[in-house]
Length: 120
Image (cartoon, rainbow, N blue to C red):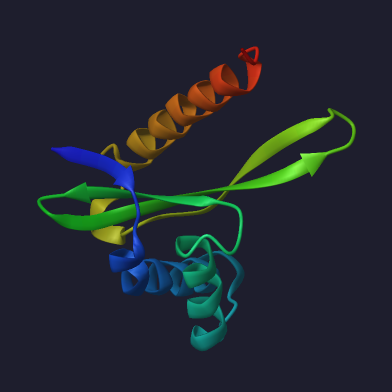
């Protein structure tokens, strides 16, 4: 069974290895592991806006998705972007991506609800 949860600092090594593979697979780009590690750690430590989600199956992380935030002057509100989506090769075509996106949609709906609430 697939379980999607917020990723934590304990997932740092996995997220870094997934992002290295993602850059190589999609852009034939070799990222600097130390720089990447610092960038991912910045998100986990709250020094950068965003949230990673981890998809687990049988206690092992098999996929990830990152949501980042950005101010939109056009919309006069925060918007978010989905980035760094990766599914381990052996877990592809098994619903991992679908689970990650479903979680992202629920997260978006929660944020929209919270941002539309009137202050008391």
